[in-house]
Length: 151
Image (cartoon, rainbow, N blue to C red):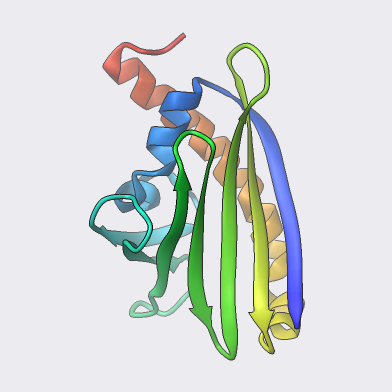
């Protein structure tokens, strides 16, 4: 069984700064509003992995993920084990005109957990992605200003 959905938004900012912020996985919880904590081991490259802890989850509940693909300043993919399957997410970054970038997440749930996910979490995950896109825009802008590379 496969459940798939996509969300995207066009945000302001420099592609390089947005990419650097997005791939600094160890700092995601510092700016992503739906994460309480996270960790990441190794370089941001296929085979490296980490974990996230979402708001509203038990204090010890960590969701592991592995980076499965990286195309610098274009896309990266992750895979996370789920009960009776897995979740794969493709993160996209496309120039959208002067100082704008279209960011996207394509989510695929493989396995029997899909209907349960759809019923309990899909709607909130889709909504949360837009909050994350807005926070990414703000954090990338802040980082660019710190390094003097803002527009």
